[in-house]
Length: 506
Image (cartoon, rainbow, N blue to C red; front, side, top):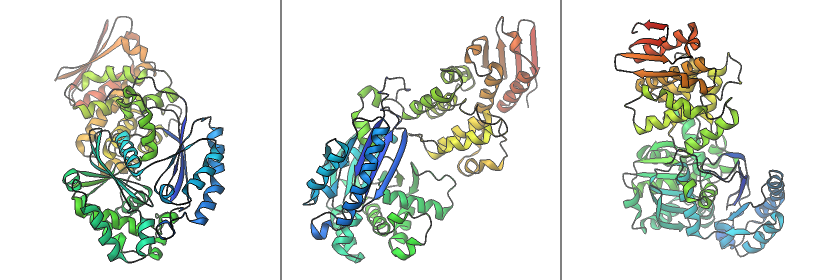
């Protein structure tokens, strides 16, 4: 992936997703690879609740939708989006009164609604996952209220696209509470796909959709998982199947008493869990990865130029954040180059994480000095950053936390203590100390880095101040440089005209 310098469209974008169970508006800051969301709101209308039985949209749901859509239209206008994308899915394409409903939506927004067919819905779901997880390999499964979309995914390519009538609202309308009939129907639909086990076995199912996100949130609560971020939350295949089996047997009364289960998901969560459990049983994936990105983000990704699509969404997001909040522009890339001699044998993954940390190393400068480390740590953990695991995000957060002088033994680091090992802590200590040295040396103005060089020769860490820059050295620099040398387990030496200082290996 490219590092993120292509010219993207800076205009905000908006998508209204008209689903069988919910209608959601998402407004994006711009039309770039970062998929940065500035507004996200949904209304549970369940317009597809009675569809399987009546062939028509649920009347109360339609009334609720029309009561709320004018608000969405007003927000879109206020945010300066003149071309919102309106997407309609399974319920409206199958209901006899679907066209009438969509006509009124078009009148509300003054824009046409794109009625997706099943294959197009699956394709956009696949693109949504690729947008947030570019290296995805396996099967994307997007569960809506009326349908289940499946698509094979492998390093950015999609194949075997299919839409199945297996949404929880449809299944409940068709079979009521008869779990045996629901199970048999789901199994028959999935087993008819000759490619499914080949595409998913030993690989990953990427779970998309609000019901499955609610399932992930419940699993986090039950297991005490320390980082409550749904995107890229992972469960082993067998563990996920066992958990889904338990949830599928819970009544609505039981689910309604669980605080983390959204009220709007109580009616469908047990059936959604059953669908995922049967999918896992038949396809035998190694793991389930939950994606917060689906057809809304997929529609934005689909509209990007090829050069923009190739960009690394992590580095794009970090670069944009630094542009908005760092004191000086361009500092992150110069920091990255300056500390590179300290990490000659790093992996491609470590290099990418180091680049991300360098780009956002200055976003905490405006916080109160006593709380900068803690604030920036928690902020990075909760940022909308794509294309990295929870462990990788925690590594970046820990490195920037250390850049602000945070204690590596503080109780603040509960997430890092739970997710990272000693190797990752060592990496974060070293990078954070190098960034802290650079900040102290330059005051955040990376132009001053041109007068200093770092070198690691295997036995010593050497800081050289070039002619005319010797005045940058002082007690604070010596202290920070000595700490950096100790983190690398070597002696330190500072050089410059009329300047020589040494530090014993710690």
